[in-house]
Each structure stands twice: as structure tokens, then as C-alpha cells.
Amino acid sequence: MRKYKFLEHTADVKFQAFGKTLEKAFENASYALINIMCKEKIKPLIKKQIKIKGKDLENLLYNFLEEFIFLLDSKDFLLGKIKNLKINKKNGDYELNVEALGDNAKNYKTELDVKAITYNEMFVKKQKDKFICQVVVDV
Amino acid sequence: MFKLRKEKMVEIKKINDVTWKIEKFGDMKVPVIIFASKKLLEKIKQDDTIKQSMNMASLPGVLKNIVVCADAHQGYGACIGGVSAFDINKGVISPGEIGYDINCSVRLLKTNLKLEDIEKKGKKEIIHSLFRTIPSGVGKGSKLKLSKQELNDVLKEGAQWAVKKGYGINQDYLHTEEQGCIKGADSSAVSERAKSRGKSQLGSLGAGNHFLEIQVVDEIFDEKIAKIFGLEKGQITIMIHCGSRGLGHQVASDYIKEMENKYGWPKQDRELVNAPIKSELGKKYLSAMAAAANFAFANKQLITHWVRQDLKHYFPNLKIDVVYDICHNIAKFEKHIIDGKEKQVLIMRKGATRSFGPGHPEVPSDYRKVGQPVLIPGNMGTASYVLIGTKKAEEVSFSSTAHGAGRLMSRTRARKTISGEKIKQELEKKGIDIETGSWRGLAEEAPQVYKDIEEVVRVSHEAGIGNLVVRLKPIGVVKG
Image (cartoon, rainbow over all chains, first blue to last red; front, side):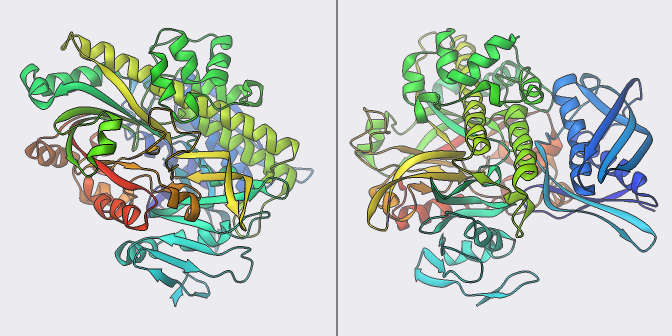
């Protein structure tokens, strides 16, 4: 199965990420996001433990991806590898826990600035035997 | 009749060669007016612009009509190139109708140099020097180390903070929209998350469509007004296009989430989430937006200062003045005529330029008798324009006109079909030197991915909502 694919969008960047499980689809969405910013392979040298909450799956995906834009701008952290991504539902809300491994962005050539994740055309759904996340990011 | 993608039929009525109207129907509370030529309208119809403008027309408290500019294209929630007016008591404010890059804006500098001066000293070297001096590209941060208090001062005072600190002169902010400082900014309404994204980015261009360009005044359409702006044929100008960087983007994201939690979202589009203008949350967003806008004003003021310093090395007698600095993504309280009566309303411009006519009190005093300069950057291969705001714009377009060429081709397709290196060679042949940190970024911003700027400004001029003053031809570009 492909991890993700980019789709046509006039002004911004649109992608779909796939996974056999919801967790895998989220993981692949984070790789698609990083691929927009940097084409190099990022070494898993720094570890960040991340906890994200969301009221629904779209909100969870938005918050999860936004964390990597935040970490890049404020901590120079560029994501390389996702480990142990878990999504749980607690009292109607979603909670995501993950170990993010990456490196200092200054060691890489980053090309495109992702300004923000958007809800525009966003969905998270199960289609037959796979999960699909669709995201448009503002660049 | 025109069929929206996957949806119902819509009738777009022709008013004249450059004006079109969609009467209100369904959920729409007001009609949509589109300023476009037939050719540009065909392009506008190819994406979701029309549908998004109709969604904008359905929000509570929306007044008179939605305005769609000639360079409009699909955005998120609201289209880019969309302008709307809201009743202050019954209306809402929506971050999606302003954009993530709050106060993405353009500043034009004029110099006492001619093209020969630049060529004598070596154009390539000068552009390379500016590229090294002005931080650009992803993750390329500021040369400043700001304390928490200093960042709060920037958010409160905008370009005026920078001038107070010695980065420029008073005249710089006097020639800036809102004098470089939107009042009512509250740094405590900006999250720590947003501040930590922006703290290390003040005084940097960023990437994407942001740039710094050296230009030459190439054609004068209105001698009298050009003279008032201090522009003459053959003169070198410098244009800076950038915004509020990560800080503004995070302010938008934060409030979209907060408004969604409190008020839910409109059925048409989650990105059109909003809050009543009069609500606590609405007011808080407005003061955070003003803070982010001030960050963007300060950002361009610092870049202006470094441009001056850098070019002084080459030209000791250099004089650089700000012609004007104008917002593209912003909400403003302004007075407009609604149902025959003057009324204070909230105007939201997303990818649109304010276009106040002669005599307007908000226009700097030395320009007031002719009107406000409107700056419309083109793509790096063609030209940019200075227009003049008009009385007609006050009547028909909430004092607004287009803001650029408008994208035509997706970044994905641009990358697949265009090579950055080739673009650089082609532009060099036309006498335009480029410095960029990213070939891919250059391909994505290639001239052919944009609509025809000539057509966009022609429509503005013909519709009388922003009239031609001068054309500026690029000779060198610094891109993130």
C-alpha cells in the first residue's frame, strides 16, 4: 500500500495518507507533511514524547500535524520517524500518544514553509479495508 | 448558467464587461459581485472560488454583497480575493475570511538610483548581498534575539516599535497602512505557542510566494499621481512581500479551534468557523489579529532597515523612502455606505487590497488629495503595478481591489512540469537575476503558474476600483 499521495490544488498542497489501521494512516499523514517541507531523509536523533487531544478524528489529525509545524518553528525539530502511535477514545474525546524521532532542522535543506494545517476538504475515513486521511495545508 | 462542482446550477449575470453578479438564493443572505473579464471569470469558475464566495454570503450579519476580485482563486473557507462587510452588532468575524498569514502585505520602497547605477556596481553581486543579508527560506530565522517583553512591545506597536529602536525613520510608518500599528492589539490574546513560533522569525522573509524584488519604473500611466508618489521612469524601486510568519499562522489556527469549541461551525464549511463580533471571543480574536498584523508591519520595517544598510555599502549617497505599505489579509472597522447610509462596519479582506479614494482621512496627508497607493505584485517574470484608490471603489467594492496575479497552476503540477534551474536561466535572459534557497520553491512560483497580471490590473482600472499609475519591471529577485 502507498503511504501517501499528493493531489492537485490550485494554491495550497493537498494529500491523502493511507494505512491498514487508523494509527498507520495518521503516521503516514505526518510523513507526507514533512515531505512537503524537506525531501531529505531525517535522522532519528532527538526524541519527543507527544500527547494530542481531539474532539473528533479530523480535529485530532489537525492538532497532531500542527504539532510538527510548531516544533519546527519554535524548536527547530524536524520529524524523521514515528514510533508507537496510539489513538484511544476517552469519554467521547480522542487522545493520541506518540514518540516522535527527528533531528535539528538546521542540518537539512528545508524548502517549503507550511503555514498551517486546514480543515479545508479534510476527512478521516475507512474505505473497505483501509483508512484514508485527506489534508490540505496552507503554504 | 454555470454548474458548481458536484452541486446545483448557478446563474452568473453579466452587468458589464468587467462586472458579474450572482443573485442571492438558497442560504445566501446577499448577492456576490465578481470583478473580472470574461477570460478571468472562466479561470475563476474552474475551482471552488464561486462556491466559497456563496458560502461567505450566507454568514450571519453579512451586508450588501460579497466582492470577488479579478485575481480570485480557491482558498480555505473563504476564497482568496474575497471581501465581505459585516454588521458590527449582528455580524460575525471569521479567521477563515482573513487568512492564516495575517497581514500578508506588500511594501514599496523608492530609491534615488537608476538601473545604470546598479549595473555599474554589479547587479548580481548586489542581489547576492541582499540574499545574504535578509533571512529567507524555511526555518531561517531572525538576526534579533527578542526578550518576552520586547516581543510583546512589537505586537503592540508594530512598525513604530522598530522605528523607535532605530530601525528606520518616522516617515516609514507614516506611509504604512494604519501607520504600521493597528490599534487595540493585545499581546495577551496571542498564545505562548504562537509567540514561540514567531519569536525567532521577526525580520525574515519566509518562503513560498514571499520575496524581495529590485525593480525599475518601466511605464508611467498617470504622470501627475506618479509624481506625487515620487516615482519617475527609470527609477529603481524595491518591493518586499511577506507576512506575520509562524506567529500569525498560529493565531489563526488557535482561534479557529477556540471558535469551533465555543460556537461549532457553519454547515457549509468547517473553515468558515466564526464568532459574533461583539462576543468576548470575537473581540479577543480581533485584538490577537491586530497583534499579529503589527508583527508583520515590524517585520517589513526591519527588512527595510537592513536593505538600506546593505545597499549603503554600494551607494554612499543612497536615499530610500517608503512609497507605501499595504495589507492583503486583514479585518478592519471602516465606514461604508450601506442602504444609502454611512455605517461603521467590519470589512474582511482576504487576498485583496484596500483602495481608498481621494480625500479619505486614512490616506497619508501627502497623498490625500489623489488617493491611496495600491500595490499589486505580479509574478517574478512580468511586472508589478502601482494603482490609485478611487471614490468608485468606495461605492462598489468596499474600497477594495485585487492583490496580485492569483495562482493558476497547483504546486504539485508546477513541480512536475517546470524546472527551477531552467526558470532561472529564462529569467536571466530577460535581465532578471534570481537568488533562491530552493529550486523547488522557484519552480512552484514560476511565472507560468500565475494568471495574467496585465489582465488583472486592466480589470481593476476598467471597473474603476483601482486605476493604473505605474508599472514596475523586476531586475532582481530574492526568494525564500
